[in-house]
Length: 227
Image 1: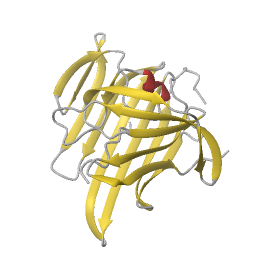
Image 2: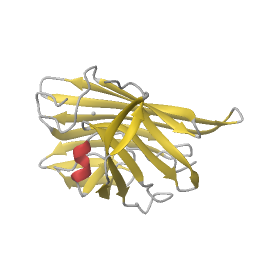
Image 3: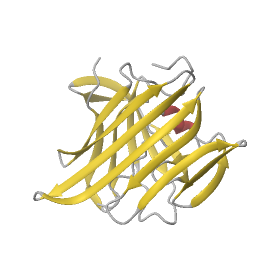
């Protein structure tokens, strides 16, 4: 179960400040996490709009039980700040099922983005953006900041043919992508390949396979959307 949830929340119509991502009308989006047709967790992101900035506050909670016995737990919380359309800071915490815990901090400083996480302090390009699947514009980048571990990953994205999917029993024609990212030497396994579906730039659904459990697909699907 160790690789099930390499999810960067980093889990969002455009605001008056031309943010690169859409902001839902109620300033909140919610997803179910599904494995073997069972709900094993949820992802909720709230958007706090200020005069010239937006804070995306995301919380991911996972609790897997086998025969009613807890088998896997995962928790991640991030606060991602965008100002005038630019990513300027991150404050996050990730707790894996083992002894791995990461405090993620990052801020724009002196024309750089100074961050700390699994690899210690990093001095990054000021224009780097977080690995946040909600932000469809992120798919155009070559490198991103992984907010789960506080590291940089190179990414490769391929757009596939549009595909019909169902969200809350409503069929929509979604834009479909395949997303891959580089492996860090400290990772305990390869970064899973994600399949992503977007509708009108909003993330509707994503799927991936656990490298140690390839028979079971993990699905993260929107549960609060309607036309």
